[in-house]
Length: 159
Image (tube, rainbow, N blue to C red; front, side, top):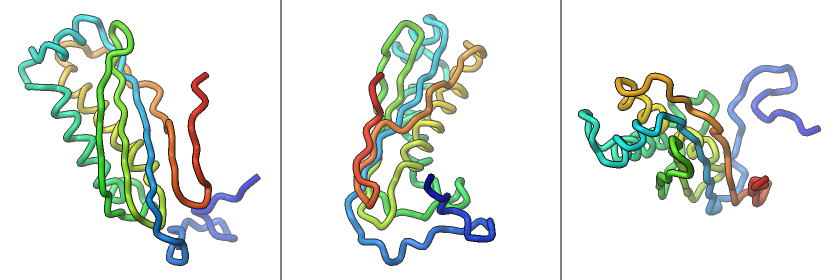
């Protein structure tokens, strides 16, 4: 079993020293699912909510969140992100899938930035739609793929 890198030998928290690592291109993709009533999904798709275009506001919230990850997650390194993209699909009736793709040229990866982006985008959808549907759920926040760095390439098994 591998050791947890955010703790020293005595168990104290620490920020991992990445100073000796090479800067490389690193990417990560994460996703989240927001379940809601079919009627709420129609309001989102047709842009009929009083608060505005839910998906565009959620996209901006996700981008901003990715850029602020180091302010939110205590041991994350601040990173000079080169790209943050969020996409939205409707995989089933009453379901909105959010996917973020994040890239950086740095000494550490961007998995946390991608996960933060989809999480905050999903929370933004909830916030903007809660008056219409308080029973919405945010599910399956997960890393889909990452590449770059010592640990190499990871792709989630589709099953």
